[in-house]
Length: 118
Image (cartoon, rainbow, N blue to C red; front, side):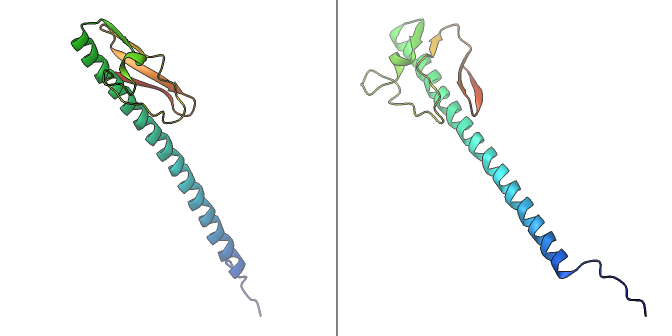
């Protein structure tokens, strides 16, 4: 008598479950990477926002047309920002803001260039 072959065996089901598990883990790791990059990007925007706001306040109070990072950030009472914590190793120390500036930016190899409009 003819017996129909089984299409899905116990081993086949185990292989399919394993494949679904691998895909789920891969998808989760991709999502976590995107979440880390987004978190770093948000931190960089926050740092630029702090520097930009402090620069506008500094130039208004001190009647100056240009201000550098070092004028704004530090532990002294005359500084407008106590500290800036880099999100992923970016360097803010080269930022100079002029009255005519419309943007400030910082670059990072993991995130790219982040721009903040003043």
